[in-house]
Figure 1 (cartoon, rainbow, N blue to C red):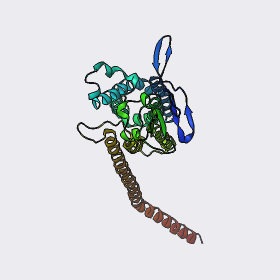
Figure 2: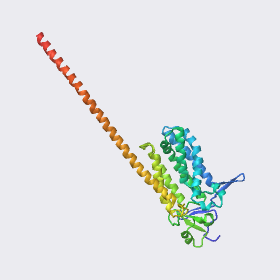
Figure 3: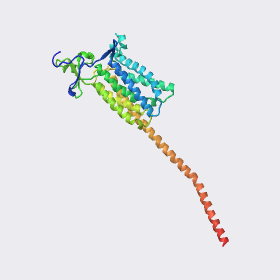
Figure 4: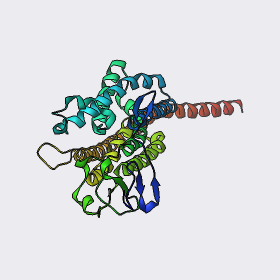
Length: 333
């Protein structure tokens, strides 16, 4: 290794002056190799479940419902995330079908997991006769927390990074530790004979974006106007953030025979759908509120009209009594 080169397992953030030595991708327990990627994903699921249960309790729901739901969501979300990745990376697996099962090496696409998760929650809501949108609203904070943590699994795997940058968060990785398909010509151009590439840490961008979105959602939850609003906030907030980040990444998945990034298009569509659905729903709710107010006012007017004859009759009776009293007093005199 020449002067200025990096150790094989090192990771460097030069502009932050942070140099990490010997960052492992895995460790061994009783002879078994355990990938850090899988450990971090697993911890992400666990912390997500505790957060979901806490949100359920605070919104007067039974947390046990979500523990039951978690069993199915975890299984089918992982399957969905893997299938999505494999389908859009088929050239990498068509000659190695057993490689499809090697998820410890990465290759889980979040949108595949989200789609499968939503489908699982919908079926669960029909079987258990629960409100689908209330379930998804409660799950969204946990999903975001899982994503915040899960992206650090990509960090240990040396994946999910973007084009060359010399910005504040620029990251350096030994070129031998990354997939050759993720290395761009611009990265190679800036190597200048070194054994590392300098990249945009898009895993970090997304983790920080999701953390910000999670904080906003947790603060807003008690103010939500309708079931499904938190879900729309997730779809719109994550969608627009992912679309921006996807533009920087070099490991994008594309629609067949095109240069159109799949996740960027899905993210933009989610953002547009969420924005339109939010506006339409709020307009409908405001109309219902106005209509309800007008109905109340109409009922009050009708009640006033009905009470008018009664009031007149009461006044007449009072006047008649007064006349009778006057007559009686005159007769006494």
